[in-house]
Length: 167
Image (cartoon, rainbow, N blue to C red):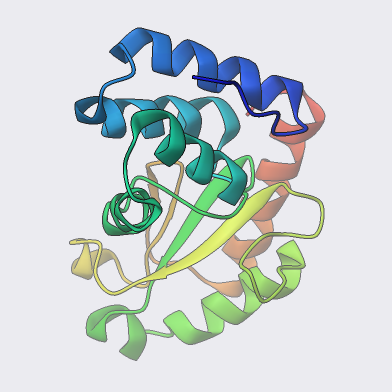
């Protein structure tokens, strides 16, 4: 099958390795998408189209899988994932103020990505830590009983990690 140039050498190399790993069979769709997600941080549209072509699958099927599983993202993500619980228990304890403060401090755009690419801010409906509300989870680490002052400390810690070259 002829190789199509995606115009991104890094993406082409990752895709080639992922397809080789699964033998280029339609049953390898999820592992190929997982590899692309792991390497790129998201699934670009041109990559999905090429995966469909190379695995001989309808593009709608590839897109459907990529949008069905929450592990996949169709847009770039920041170095850190910041999730704010907006469920009932957290909401009544001030989670909307925490959300607003995080969005302001991180300078988050409408896409949820901070201007500097440091973080992606996401709202979730429940993190299962209602007694600690309002709760924020950063890269799997729970920050309970959040306040606007603690938001500033959290963002400062993220920026310091970024300055030290840690992700």
